[in-house]
Length: 116
Length: 115
Image: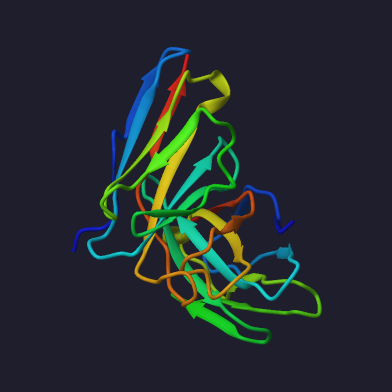
């Protein structure tokens, strides 16, 4: 069956450019997460949605980062005025569970962003 | 805050050797613990998990036991194969089972199995 998909898989941006990264979660999954993975590091939590509601955005590194999930399915992570330190792999994960139940997070392949 | 510390790699072993990858954690409450694996060119996959103290997670010959007294969740396998070569991440979730709470990951351990 279809897993979590992300697009584009690779993105090269010039410093100062805006980028938009897309995540298509597994159909019907309530929860959606974004993570940032720097080279040689583990993923770090950015933000969490339950359906269309963004319940936690404590991991977003600055106000240049913005995420949305307007219809409770597809999500977009937008980075404005990209900086070189934004270069990383951005991972999306989804889960069938809501906020207080157990479940497994299924990860997409990631979008590798390189800011020049 | 929460944190996960795992042994640094790369770890290089011969086929059929015994594997241990150490993982310790710091958490304020009662976390659930996970091992994720990333095979070359693929996304992160859940390998196993444990949600309370003394639980043992197991999958594909890998095992890990949730040790609250030592705040550890070491990954073990009795006889590794070349196909086990991958990056392994230990992770925790502070609240209810990791379903809808952000995971805190370790830095990952690159495992290389030589024939």
